[in-house]
Image 1: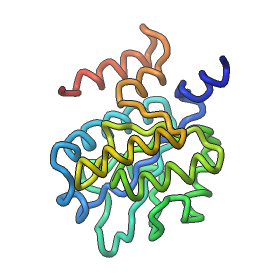
Image 2: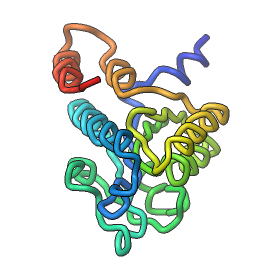
Image 3: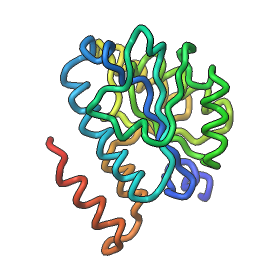
Length: 192
């Protein structure tokens, strides 16, 4: 029973948020509905992680060509931003070092593209022994078919597929706490 809880329960004290490659020149190519939801929900998760003083690591894929993290997600790069050329974040030693420094055992994954950099990072993190929670309403791809295939395959590989609200309320655990007030305020900003 504890194994199930260890895998499926996101714990604030063990979690790091990883924001993958939400960049200026890549964003316009994304499916507009998925991208809009990614920005809204990633910002909610960033604020939630900041409220719990948990680590946030952002990555940028070849920023010389693809630009930097979009201005709508500036809070993502406040703590740590890793430049990379490997599709998987784990292909960059600087990312591994940054993640290890956090002491996190769980990685909450958001970003783009779901079927390339996000998916490859999920697989590599699972292979390294991390519990990976992939936030389905905070990732996107150019085509919904790629997005859907990546979500399904990541789940089969062992990632926990979650949503923004599921993740935020798992961090809180108890109604009436200060964290609950913060998260309740955040989720009221969310639109269907």
